[in-house]
Image 1 (cartoon, rainbow, N blue to C red):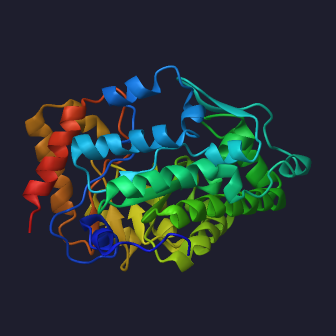
Image 2 (cartoon, rainbow, N blue to C red):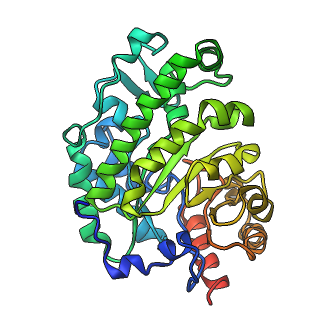
Length: 350
């Protein structure tokens, strides 16, 4: 399976042990969007470089991915990229506009549009393989998390033409032409699975599927119109035997279904306490989360008190990875994140 021969040191890391629901020396910590955004060193190296360009520059990707590991002493690195990178790689005309997000020049709304979504090959994202090679050499025993956008969220960007508050075009297609919708998500599942395989074969120790917008759906719609495609992605990488994490925002009502899709670890946003999330997900899964990111703007004593609430709620879990309930915010104090990592490590030391 390519270079996917984990060193025993990486295999024995607190992060991978928690993913496997094994005893850990301390609760492992990493943050979504830890690579960049709030770090001055990130802003310095990214200066003048458009987001999607930066994702194709292996040395820059490696440097940005390493920055939070060096600064915060987190238990895992997360590959610096963007969920639309594989779409750009197969020729979709898109750009990430500052303050807006991904914008698609020609939205995908008809059967003819579907033909524009060709298969992704490793050659399309050769820079990913190169960057991960650089990273695994430098990370040593620290695991690297690869990631991709889930089919529903990618479909939403493609159909809407950009970020959307109400997902009206997306839902109109899902309800109005269920066969085209199913074919679109199936195609995106193939692209996403191929993108994750590239990352694992290059040396990623775990992968996370981000379904940022799926909280917009009711459970019945998720089961019928989304779960099969997400399950296809997880099935595609199952033979590699690396932990698979599934995360969405506003997904309290979907947690059980997201676990059903095939993840080993279910990410939980801040709206549902972890002990309740465990009841919804059911046995046999580790959980990840789930401090409200906005808490980091409060005084340190408050951050520690709220963190302890999360750790207390996680006390009975089979496996727990500490994370925020969503990503690091751009104006967050990096020192507050470093203090948070230290607090979790110290207070959970076994």
